[in-house]
Length: 319
Image (cartoon, rainbow, N blue to C red; front, side, top):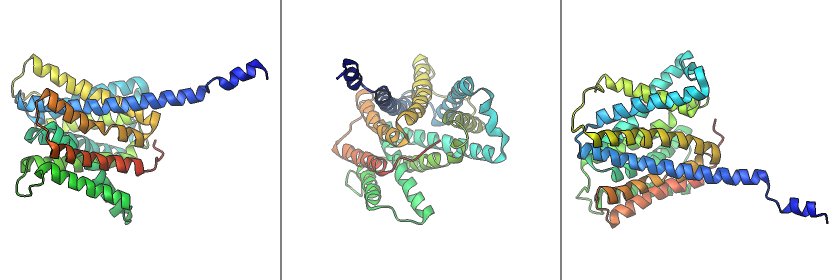
């Protein structure tokens, strides 16, 4: 046999190498995005509980600043195409609803839940969102969920029960306000995930996200002006706010989009479930939060629900 043929057979296929590199890069990006989102919640808790800033102001500055940065990135890539969304009344309506009820809604409810409890608990309960989406889709399609899906939902409900009661039904571990806003964050996350479907079929993810953030932030600034600052505003406050905006919003949102293109939305969402884990770890080491066995058990059950739904869901083509 010719030596050249032997060499060619033994050489790795270029397409195979590219695929493996994409899988590694996509997986790494998804893990980093989830970790940074977990860090963002910890930073928010620090601002609320150590610097006395309000969730309203932090959400406002985060959305407006991040929206401007993401739209700048989108403009560099897409030029004037980022304004195409405003040429259709239906798209404008969907974008406004997504910005106010979706983007602002999920940020505000999540941050208020953190303010009443802690980042780890709020993040974990917010991850009930996929279960809510499953129930909504089942009702809309008038079809029963599969046994595995039903098991995952029941598992998540039991997980929340353990997390907030520690198996003592007469004693809530977190306040009623914290539970209310954390559950609100889960419903807001479900709406946030479903609403922009039509927009994402016509426009890029970074464009839709950027406009949603900017619209949501500007709309709420009429209620809580961005210049109405209260709390302790020092160099540490500024530094943490920058972390929330850049490392907790702009970077994770950007690399999450890249990850979905490299390994698909199902695997990306699966790997990003590291967020509640990272939030718990950061809470323990940075904020000295006490996390007991019941907390770990409840968290594990909720994360298991997300993993089961992600693994069981068939990969679908996304624009």
